[in-house]
Image (cartoon, rainbow, N blue to C red):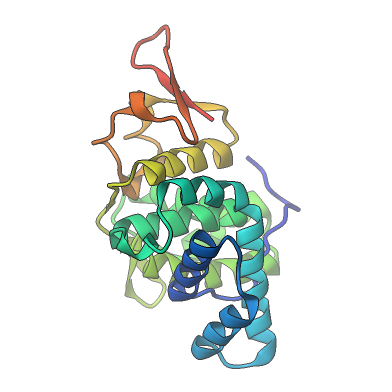
Length: 237
């Protein structure tokens, strides 16, 4: 899919701890306390302008994911977000960030495609491959630079040395809502309407998540299972 000219939106790095706090706040209280969020942002970042940019990113994330967060609040009880395993919290944040800023999904897909044939990828290779999708513009370069540290914090890639990255262990998912959110995100952002169940272990996106223990017959929050003439069935939004 060619995304040249599409909205990119990521201008500053957003630390994982800030995203965790914002999502927990919204799940617990149904809103985001921007003043409190800004105070936390300033603990990690210097400069008023940068802090306000990060607050804007958080605000966009909450707004674009209101429906998903509302469904999440039905599954994750008030003040229990931090009781989820770290893998589940990281997976949820990755999905929310991807749904807010789809370039993140594209970066992860590009990296996963390379990891299928080799163990490492350079930032230069990421930029080159993303340039074929978005065009070699400055906004894309900035977004890649600012998103990669978040992906490292989320535990889906690791930095071997400057500008060289390798894959991490898959995030094991125990929560049904988050398992559905992972599949929903892939279907939506890939531009497809559904995915074959048999493809879940082969699509690049699933290089980062272990969700094979779930019975897809029970999915009913974000996606549903449909029968297929070729067997195995498929999942759709």
